[in-house]
Image (tube, rainbow, N blue to C red):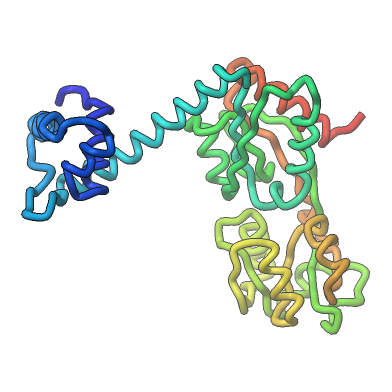
Length: 301
């Protein structure tokens, strides 16, 4: 197959969106015959019809629908390249992409990144944050979809370079009227008979709790399943179940809600996070500066 032309793919996607060659020609300021010629060449290139001409316009064939999906992905990638290069042209000398877990995002990362960007020496740097579960963070860094990842250090980080970031402490959060609420601390084994509000199965916290329950020969009693810490804390506030979340995340919520934070006394409840990247030697300068800054937050001098 010959190389696909991006402009032709753009026109093909536009025709599929408008269901009309004439309307696309008007929008793109191109004569309709020129678009028709490009589409005919595209069909010749892929070796199959892509559009069905009807009285009121055109619709994609099954092959056309498949090509349209691929075309949208390619055009989105090209658009990202154009935006990144435009950033350099306008004086922004670095764009750092990060993949991070929900725990890291919910705790101190936003403040740490904000402090980095507020430094006048970093005014020409942009940072993008995307939330993933720990295995997806590691996979994304290995595949090169981002420069930096931050996740639980118990994840499989083989093949990547790492440095320490911050840590947190898991705690039981219960309604103020719950029997656990007044305890100074508690072992995880002693709360397994209660019903839990749980996070997605692949989240770092949920994986850790499932393993700890299995060691005790039990399973977690799930009453409610939610997608994030904020939702979990709201369920606890309604007194539907208890939850295990980072103490650092629950602290602010507990100031205005009738819930109590009971630290877990188990050694594994103290979690550490790692900054990971493929290689320090291949980190772009802006990403290297950010890694240095973040590592310093985890180990203040």
